[in-house]
Structures are given as C-alpha cells and as structure tokens.
Image (cartoon, rainbow, N blue to C red; front, side):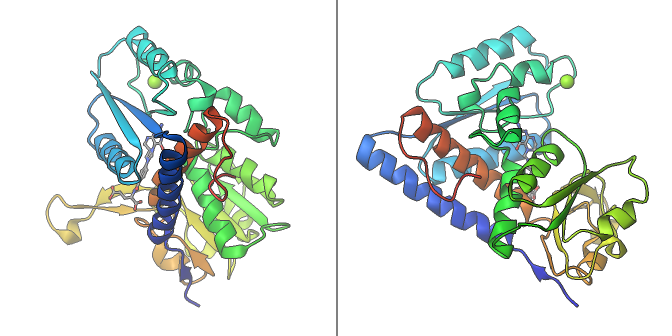
Length: 300
Ligand SMILES: Nc1nc(=O)c2c([nH]1)NC[C@@H]1CN(c3ccc(C(=O)N[C@@H](CCC(=O)O)C(=O)O)cc3)C=[N+]21
Ligand SMILES: [Mg+2]
C-alpha cells in the first residue's frame, strides 16, 4: 500500500484565502485591519526565516504586520515592557513572542505577560486552562493545523484511537486536548513510554511531535493509519554535496508511507498549516476584540 499524501501546503493556501476574505470584510464593513506583532529576541537564523515568512504572509492576506527585533542580550524588563506596550496597542490584535528565548529570559513569565485575548500562540496559562476545560480560547497553531487536516481527511474523528508522541506544552499536550475534544481515545507517548512500538501500533491516528529526526519507523504504524508528522529537523545531506542539509520529519517517511493510509510530508505538511493558523487566530482575536461574529471554519 502507498499512503495518500496530505498536502499541507495546498490546504494552508485555502486557509489563507478564507482569512483574506474575512480581512477584506472587516475592512469594508467596519474599517478594521487586524494586526499581528511578532517579537524576535536574538538572531537565530532559522527563527529569522520563520519570522520573515510570518510577516510576509500576514501582509499578503491584508493584515498589518509589526516586527520587533530585540538584541540577544536584551533584559527581561525590556522585553516585558514591549509586551505591555503591545497589550495596550489597539492596532495589535495578536502577539507572538518567538520561542525559544535566550536562556537568561523566563519563557513562562514572558508568555503569561501577554494579554490572553492577544495570545495567538495559545500558550498563556489562561488559554491552556480554557482549552482543557472545553471553553472558548486561543488554540496553539500547530495542533490546530493538525486538527484541521485530520477533520478534513476523516470528517468525524469520534471514537478513533489517537496516539500523540511527545508531551510538550506547545504541541503534544494541546494536541491531545483537541483530539479528546473531538472524542478520540487519546494516549500520550513519550521517551519513557514502555513498549512504545506496540502503543503506537494501536493507533488509527499518529501525531509525531518529538523533534528527533525519523525516529518513528514504518513498522510502528498500523496499516491504513493516518500519520501527522510535526517534526521539522534539519539534518546533514552529504549526498546533496559538501555541507548541504535537508529537512526531515520525526517519522521515517519512506517506510511509514508504505504502511500508512495517509501521511503528511516534511516539508509541505504541518509547517505551512502552522503559519496559516497563526493568521486565522489573528483574525479570530480581532473579531472577538471588536465584539463581532468570529470566522467560521477557522477555529477549533
Ligand atoms: N512562539 C512561537 N510560535 C511558533 O509557532 C513557533 C515558534 N515560537 N518558534 C519556532 C517554531 C517553528 N515554527 C515553524 C512554522 C512554520 C514552519 C514551516 O512553514 N516550515 C516549512 C519549511 C520551511 C523551511 O524550508 O525551512 C514546511 O514545513 O514546509 C516551520 C516552523 C513555528 N514556531
Ligand atoms: Mg529560557
């Protein structure tokens, strides 16, 4: 069997089209332009690439983009002062502080300083609590994108066995909450899970989010299962030439795609959906801030 490829890049383009439509309507009917502020501390090259990509796509769908770049040695007080300023800025509906932060900055402190209504990453403890109790919240972009692809492919997820590999606050835990919300039977597996191959082999849905290149082999996958690969790992690719690299997921695509029913590729799977959902969350936050009906099909 050869798995169907779930094209996240194409799906993300349809999400951006919907977002652009809502943005145009907000402008025409209410003279409102949604704004997204992205804060980058330091000069990590990969982070710079993502931030540039976010800014470009924000503008492409008609929203305002505010980029704030701070020196790698910036103080916590300085960063918190910026967050406060953005919290109070009515042109800013969404705030994203790019993670990871340099070691001397307390990520939890900074994230929880963001106004939860502007927390388009969904990382603030208020949003985490709201999501886990099934209340309206801002939902983390990567898990939201995964959920959208799963719903699109399967329709209802009710009663399916889902295994999430990885227990991070940014992907694993919120992913599990969303799958539970859609009535899956959810297992979270991680580095200490016993007989992990057998645990994963039970799953109708596998979401791999560990950040270890190609750690999930095809023989962990139940024939016909749907595999969502969240990992984006840059590895050496000497076969492409001296010093070259390539992107791979947390799943061994070659072997898994021979067993799975459907699978997301890397690149072109979850990554583009993450950014599309960031734009979707910004429109949602803007509508809520203005007491307007929020866009349908762009929230969990
Ligand atoms: N507060 C915060 N929120 C984030 O959402 C966040 C973050 N910090 N820190 C860094 C990670 C990483 N991230 C990616 C988003 C899109 C792609 C993406 O579009 N990737 C392309 C490939 C890009 C390439 O070629 O390098 C793809 O998978 O097809 C990748 C990575 C968001 N992050
Ligand atoms: Mg830190």
